[in-house]
Each structure stands twice: as structure tokens, then as C-alpha cells.
Image (cartoon, rainbow, N blue to C red; front, top):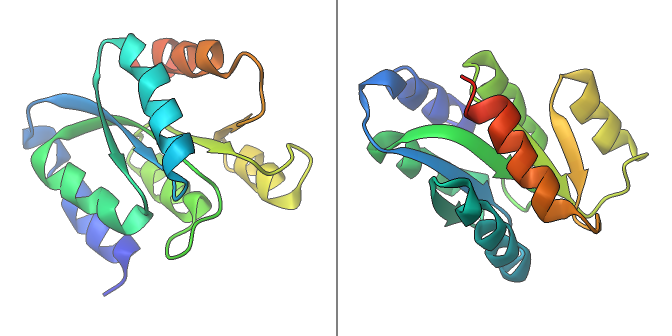
Length: 138
């Protein structure tokens, strides 16, 4: 069974869970720490993991209301995670070091997922705006 299959089964039980959290996924620990620090200002508990494979444990124990993921990771790519979460109407945002004009970034836009570059000088403000626009208004 693939990670995506396991996540799909877990997502079916999403609404019975209690604490609302945001999740950050990135295989670069410094980027993961920075995103987590920025998102703590949103008022939500922020949980972190270094790979999409680890994401499923959060869906078991929490109500995940938004996911911020790197695009390219070793075992599970962020685009695959984003596609699955879109099916369940869970806001998912890609925050990556790849160029906005790359084919991977364009794939994000095609499926309706917001894409942010880690190099944006106002990344913190953009992350918090996404939480306000997509998560808080659900």
C-alpha cells in the first residue's frame, strides 16, 4: 500500500478529530524550522515532518486544517500530497526553492494549488495571508 493510499484511508476519518493544526513538510530542516516559526503567528498549533510519509500520523491524531509542503522530496513529492488533499478540500500550499516558472511550479497552478518561492522576501506575510484566506474562512 502506498503512502497516498494510506493517507486516503486516514482522511476518511478526518472530521472526528479535535485539535486543529497546520502541518509543514520539508526535507530541509532549516527551511522546515523557518516555515514553522512563521506559521506560529497564525494562532494554530504547527506540526512539522521531513517527508510526506510522516504526514499520515498527524491525520490520525489531529484535525489538519492546512498543509504547507516542499515540492521536491526524497520519498513523496509535494505535488502528490497536494493533489490528494485537494480531493478532500484540505488547503495545501507548496513552498519550494524551485523557480516559479518551472514545470513543477506550473503543475501546482494547474491543479489549483498556491505556490510560493522560499526566496520571497515577504514569505512570512504571504504564508499568514494564505492561512487567513483559505484556512480561517473554511
